[in-house]
Image (tube, rainbow, N blue to C red):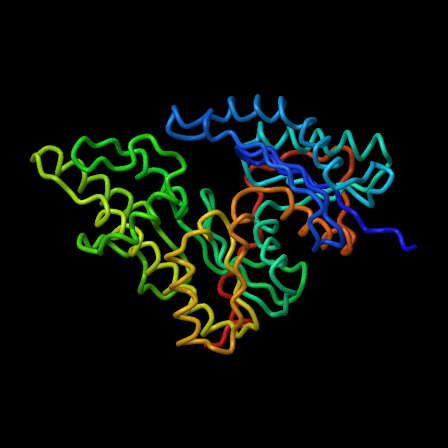
Amino acid sequence: MAKKNLILAFESSCDETSVAVIEDGQKILSNIVATQILSHQRFGGVVPEVASRHHIEQITKCIDKALNEAAVDYDDLSAVAVTYGPGLVGSLLVGVTAAKMVAWAHQLPLVPVNHMAGHLYAARFENQFAYPQLALLVSGGHTELVYMASEHEYEIIGETRDDAAGEAYDKIGRQRTKLAGFLASTTPAGKTIDEWAAKGSDTFHFPRAMEKEDNYDFSFSGLKSAFINTVHNANQRGQKLDKYDLAASFQQSVVDVLAEKTMRALSDYPVKQLILAGGVAANHGLRKRLERDLKEQHPEVELLMAPLKLCGDNAAMIGAAGWVNYLHGDRAGWDLNAVPGLSFARSNANPDLAIK
């Protein structure tokens, strides 16, 4: 009987401690996630020091649970994969240290993984990848369009110049208003805003920054400020705002820009598939809009969306990306360190790739 190709994967880039066992990069044998949402909720956002301490408390428990649920032992593993960036440096170091310890103790190859590549490969649990490919990666820390001419090649052709889309969602979710009752202390806010948006209308017409500019970049800080100013001004005047319309107006602005830029990129970069991944990929408004626009404007392109349960941070996606890296010979030494600002290579809208 042939030996199974098993990856033990670690993810600890922000506030989720996760360990998974993945077979051949495509089958999830276990995916343990220890969330910290309740610990950070009272602060209105993730506190790095608190996150690091929780990772330390949970990491060994997650390893044991992942191996037990997968019914495997260390001797069954082919390699260890770990997120080494981007993310919070203290959080990353916990996962990197644990992964190095396991790999060293059991003489297993150590495979470094870019967190954003992990998000991208979460979509491969839905279907096989075909290249060339374009990915819209939308999360709390990143919003970027990534072009892949082939497997294991990543090139950013567009990204946010300030706030990420998910960051804007979370920041407006912290607004405490007696009049609008807007989200109070709900963190993260994306799911609630998405649900409320479905019940409202775009009556506030918030700005769509950079929507028509001749590039693939994004900007959401102006939208965030416009939203906050609208709420504060209403409070000062004693005006009551409809929370559903507020949510719908905000979300419509975000979705319009993301969809417009993505469709434009698809016109310039012929691809076989469009990948939607990252935390904000769970947004139903965005998923429906891309499905509609792709059908109308680029019916030849297949849309692959990360499964809802794998849109957030998890180690299964790191195992999927880690397996690809493993096959391509990516190895880290025992001096592997966290790289909080890690990024794919940035393209200058390469004219050799794009149709002009």
